[in-house]
Picture (spheres, rainbow, N blue to C red):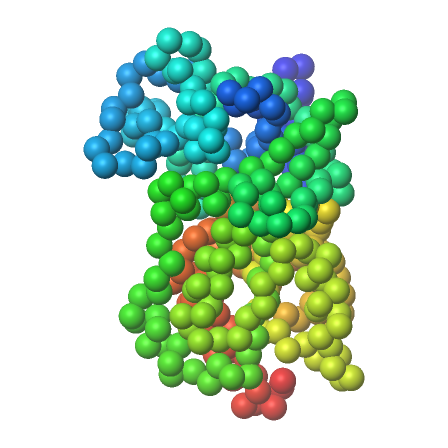
Length: 318
């Protein structure tokens, strides 16, 4: 019976990705407000260990390194980064959300985990206004009349740990050998940090690109971009998975189910970089999956698609 329940839970979580829904772990920081994080990012929840190895010259919000299954991972007090009082982990019980982002593992220290809830991306609201432009808040929702804030963890990690955005000289040399002027890249991501990093990589390549912050906007843009013959100017689309209103899997299915858009090469570009999400992306119709943030992977994928497009064009196919 327990095995049957396990299989049912696995099926339920898999089906969430096919229905524009996701499961969220809510948690508290020292301001006692409720925050949320997609469970697909979380490997494990552990009590904050007492043995924490300090890292010289590290960011002030990095508390040190802890042992996780025999290997060291960085421990970050995300509440302190956000301007809250630090967690007194030495004298009180606190917890670590061990998370995977872009094939790296970090420990995010929280006051305490709260509950698991399932939400539709339709119910996730992206806040607008100048106050949010530089904030680490990427979206909001409500549960039982309580606000839940979704943090832009990618921005937090970029500010604290840093992410390399430089393309290798070899990749740049390959780009310069291509005729890129007839090609345009579309990137879809709700994270301000991710949008900026994608722009930096594509700008180094000298290729035209458009970056939008929501899947519905991207879908509208794609449909409006078609010329009278039904051709799109976009050679390649990158899409994130986690986005308010419409997630990346749903966006991918909509693009690939449209006869005029389906032929555009689409790659999921996500920090949810595990095999399960690669399989979900493929099932939704994506042509490829690359983890954030890997500048050479982005560059090499763009190069391959431009080369293919140019080959088809020279053969009179496109």
